[in-house]
Image (cartoon, rainbow, N blue to C red):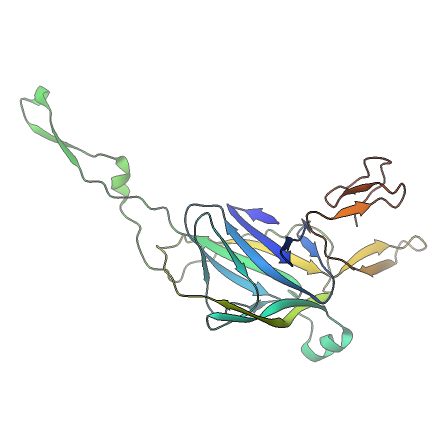
Length: 259
């Protein structure tokens, strides 16, 4: 789960939330997944999504209402999703055919919130008797001075920060077309959007690195055999005690449990 500016991005598999660590989500090659977007703000959010550098919304943007969630199951075609996301190993044959891209394995979510809505309130006319019955006008709310921010959803400036943190790197997997599904979308509207966008990036990995004990300069890569969810528990290789997947150290013997 990645959280930033009242917005959450989650990778799911078979209804379970996959654990994110250092900006990475571990899942086996051949796994189908979905992208869950949760808006914790009261305003609507408008979202762009790219996977492996490709726009998966067919040139459109998804509206996530305030305090609600939207799950994207696969690449959109028109207003429909017909196939699920599927994460596969990027073999040498695949690399030779399609090439290697710097954003392979990356799920990039960019989102804008609606501008703050400040409602016009009518002035209240009061009689101030200290001014010999002269009429004096008072604003019922200072926010009226700022006007109304209604507008249409159009082009905006993109000033973003990348939230991908340090962690394992490598272009070991890509997303392709998976099994058939059916997800329909309809058009909606928003008020004018803020000029500044926010970005959350998650790296999908089907391998994790393990240093070789024989040669420090050698790095071995092991395939992920089972998706790591937020409920997954790891068994300590030293004492056998089970710990949550978020634990860095075994609570019993102190062995480092990080992959």
